[in-house]
Amino acid sequence: MRRDDIKAMVKSLGAQGFVQVLGDLLEGRDQGGREVRKIRPEQVSIRALWEACVGPVEETLPSMRAAGRFNFVDIQEAVETTAFPSATGVLIASKVIEAYNQPGYIGDRLVTVMPSKLKSERIVGFTSLEGPKEVPEGMPYEESSFAEKYVTTETAKKGRILELTEEAIFQDQTGQILLRASRLGEMTRLEREETILSGVIDVGSGAVGYKDVYRPTGVAEALYVASNNNLLTATALVDWTDIDEVLRYHAENVKDDRAVAGEQRPLPWMPRQILTARRLAGTSARVLNATEHRSVSGNETVITQNPVNVIAPGLEALASPLLDFLATVTGSRYTVATGWFLGDFPRQFVWQEIWPLQTFRSRQDDEAAFRRDVVARFKVRYWGGIAAIDERQVIKVTA
Image 1 (tube, rainbow, N blue to C red):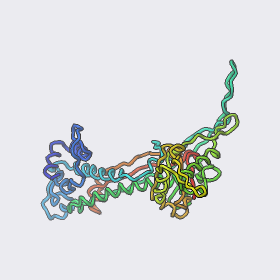
Image 2: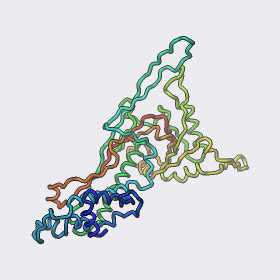
Image 3: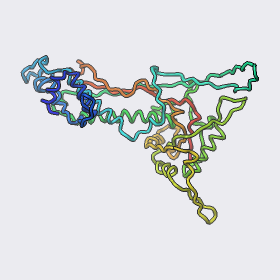
Image 4: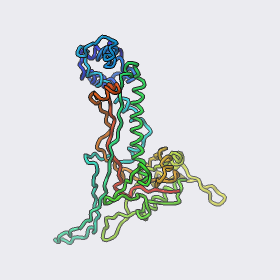
């Protein structure tokens, strides 16, 4: 977009109207909501935007006026001074969100998003002490007693600030500014992804910078332990029989704590996902997608149909290089990247979301403007956290 085109749009539409149209064009629609060709943020020069909204940089940038090198031009004569920071904010937000939403992340498929307004929540469940009993005709129903159980959640607010300086405008560093915005969006998403995955595999607070995600009755503890019947050892992922072994283990060992007629029953369970480190991505894909299974019996090779889609229909293979990395973190409970996880992850993990990804433009900071020639500042933030609300929906399997 040329400077004169921007100037004409600001004059005809006003600051708010121009910013709205710019946002629409970045999303590929016109003022009437009709689909049009998208413009890229890189097509809008930061310097051209300043000159269209405020005036020639040599005459209107505060440092240039203060230096007395050029004649002073009253900013009140400018087209619309508020259009520049608002429009720049739209461009930066566009790049942040574009990078944040790049494919390749799997964390959101492993959690259920739970909107919240509290920094920490208490999620309550109930354990039935007695099950339903037969009720003779004309007789009252017996009252059942319940014992309360609960877990607590924790969240954190995270973000960064991106500054736009006079030098960047004067030198028209549009590409560098948008690259920094893109990197900020990418790193924000990567940090959130690591928060989710480190929680799902239970890296634990023994590793510096990480937290426990399982807090029954408000007390943090390890999630995958033998006493929770969610840890199966010595079972490397090789073929469908290993998935079958996990299903058998769950059926025999994981019980519903809501007793019926005084007895705990097996907990109905159908895993939705298999989660591995990147080094096992090919293995898990082969296990799920193989059309046949070969085994040796004596001197003969026996070929049978791969039954994995019968015993665990719709199973999705997910992998991330972050698991390879997290296995190397000192103090992590996840120590071997050949370990794998099978389960219904969104039933076990929640992402408590107070703020989703947000971008803000600050009003001019006089201190920053004076000391460091900052023209505008933009903030990217989110506020949330992962918590395990159950311990029976995901099985950790070590090789």
